[in-house]
Length: 260
Image 1: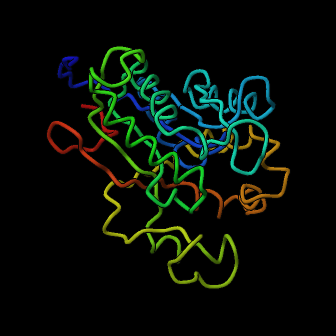
Image 2 (image 1 turned 90 degrees about the horizontal axis):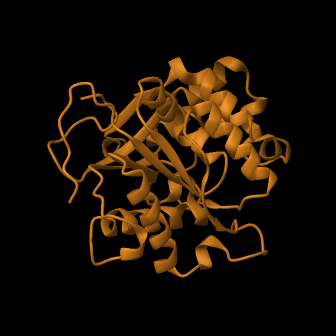
């Protein structure tokens, strides 16, 4: 197993596993920008879309703005499309092995993906959660996926999520009306499950620039376009915090994103 050295100036490296281009900016753009600003390494694995598509070029621009390197693509198809192998239908071990390869190549301190509900229930997000958990566990085992590189064991696993209280507070701004009770399609976990809250308002402009690099997603009229329709104050308030459920995998319990 690789040996870590302690360094008071060490900024934890962060590898995010996201389902689609634009998710890296929406859910983790602030954490990625802050880590890069502090001198830490950051990277993003994207489970859908392949080189040569416009969405990947937008992703490349977003990652450049966030300081998160080149796209790391699994190459599967978005659940909403029928061409190619859908991410949710791909052989599970194959998808896990691909993510293991990226973990072993990047060697992160922290791996980030969605919570068990995929943050808001999207099947690709839910599947990314399952694949990532399996990959984080497998990446440290010499016996598993030996072709994927030298074993590596991250110290932290974080799940991007939303506290239920924040969903209730912001529902009217996003959708109008009062937030419905928890259920299928409704984001949010009990507040006590959220163990890491990151104020990223200082990095809002960077996060927003990365998000708006995904022009095709913003113009197609999907959920992302709701943020464009907001006034600037509401947008900064809504996107200025990122929340996570934190799992300490090894070592003493710490803030996963804090320099140490």
